[in-house]
Length: 87
Length: 95
Length: 251
Ligand SMILES: [Mg+2]
Image (cartoon, rainbow over all chains, first blue to last red; front, side, top):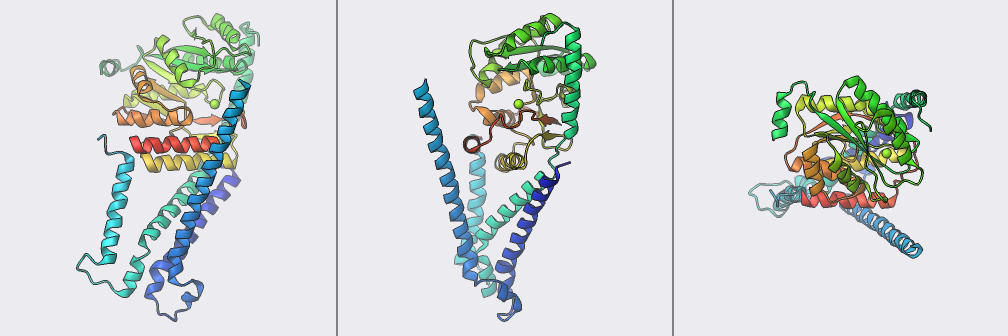
């Protein structure tokens, strides 16, 4: 049995995934087939954003990962230099 | 066998679907695609990435929920440490 | 192949001998306890065994403790193969294997995070499927980890998911280090594998599969009594990712 906090966090990851899936599926797959004046349209941005926003998100993710790896490598190099000096 | 690494396998699958998608968008195939369907078709690569991401979140979330915390194992080892110490001492072991 | 035939001839497996390799550094507290539990486990199961202690010149006197244990349990059961300096895990296994007289090798941590009671299950599993490798898994039901916080569990699970997704290794726990190997299989894999740390354990399983060796699994519990001593920071995450990508591109 997992601890309570593990189960809550794991469960919220699953709910988050289901929410993203539902929203994006409605936006990208369902909306094009509805009438232009259907009430669902009011909950979503224009279709262009269904492409630009995720692309922006992916780009941001790449930048974040790059920055993370770079900082780790710079720190490691500094540590190794410090070690070499003490030796 | 040497060339067919996991990386190559994944690239092959991705390339196949990208090709298929591109062909449909550009109109290689003799199929009539309604304007609505075409609008659905355009963001499909992103939709696939979204599916992958959601699948990953669900998998990791589920695995986290079922990751056993086994406090019994910790209790058991604590008790056995006491047993071991007593028995070793009786055999003349100096801690 | 010869070893495999011999196994099938002896249904009882009584002519098997199991060598447990214990690389130690600063384990004077834990070594007597883990050895006691190993002896207990083998006395209950009745298999032939030896414990090979490979101490890397610990300043805390781990080797003296090991000598005391040798006096208690005998030189045939407790074998000491110390080294001059702290040389790392991979070379410790190679060094220990050179002196091992068993036809099976068991690798485990000496710090009590791996419980010797599982050894008899490793042996049983090996004989059920005549496996070349049996690996302990924390991720199947019956297994688990004690003493990790949410962050550590999340990173562990995420890292394992990535590896499963990218490599499809056919084993659920790639970074665990509680395993049983057929001796010549371990020798072969040690020659082939080049990584270090977590990635080393992962590479061993992936290469085992690549070379057509069979891998069995049993659930184990991992009790982290020294939580916080082994770090899991940016450095570890990046080196894991690097190792994973290397395996992704080469296997
Ligand atoms: Mg350990």
